[in-house]
Structure formats: structure tokens, C-alpha cells
Length: 202
Image 1 (spheres, rainbow, N blue to C red):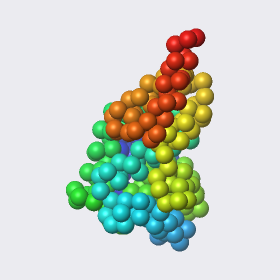
Image 2: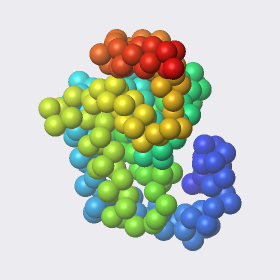
Image 3: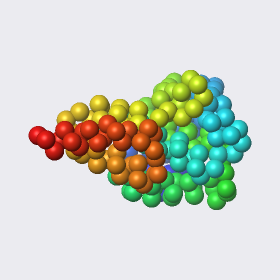
Image 4: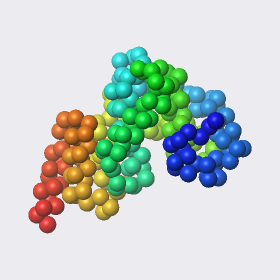
């Protein structure tokens, strides 16, 4: 009822937070005032960027790409596979949109609650709400636009440190830009080119 294929693949059925009792407790957080308010803010920040109506696949992709990069940075992970992520994104879209052409507020809020459920270790409304509001603050700007993917890619590089070499970072950026058809400004291609040249000269 509560565990989908993604959660099961991640080993959720064996985790201490996914016992029957804990699953029910986590689901009850959905109606907490703190979580409801955080989800409302998420919708109000994202909906205008996507034209004010239902979020289509392009908008969903823009959101989820930024989430993916943010979560990689937060976990200090160096491994990024653009094609692997794109395949997962298409599968997630089919599930999150429920086979429809767009996601309305209810679907978007459910999507964000599930993201919190997958990424938050604790089981408190404050932790879920904090996760949602923090993520929204990182993937959008105060001006009501998406945060540039170049900024999130730079964050990945900074947080990964030595685990992500200059040459590897250049390859990540290049493949990300090609796969998602991003401009140089959007994907930090200039910085990647400099990184590649620097690595080649060592």
C-alpha cells in the first residue's frame, strides 16, 4: 500500500523506518500543519514558474533535475549519470503524473511528500517540512525563477571535493548539457571547458 517499486528497490522494506507502525506514522505526517504549509509553499513557488497551471513534463523535468543535483551535493556524491537519471525521470513522471498530461497541486504536493519520505531519516513533521522548504529554496530563486543548473552543478563539485576531479566534472557537465539540451549559461560549460584544459595540462 505504501511502498512503491522505487522505495522497495532502495531496501525500504528492510529499513527500521518502514515497519508497519513506522509507515503509518510517516503517512500521518501528511496532515500535519507544518507539512501542509511546506507543501503549500512548494506549490506557490513552483506553479508560477511553470505558467500557473498544471505542471507538464518539461516543468517536471526542470524541477526534478535540480532536485537530483541538490541531493547529490547534500550527500557529497561524485557519481552523476545523465542518461541513467533521464531514464529514471521518465519512469517517475509516469507514476507521479498518474498517466495524465500534467500534475495539478494535489499531485505535486504528493510528489514532494514522497521525496521527503525517501530522503528524511527522522519521523517528525518539523524534519519533513524543513526538508521541503530547504529544497525549494535551493532549486528556485527569490525572483520566482528556477535556480540555474550551473549553480547546482558547482555545488556538487564543491561538496564532492577530491572525489570529483576536474576532468570528471568536465565530463559530467558536458554529458548533462548534451542530454538535456542546455545552453552554456545553464550548464556551466565554460567552467567545464576550463576544468578539462587544466586537467589535461597536469
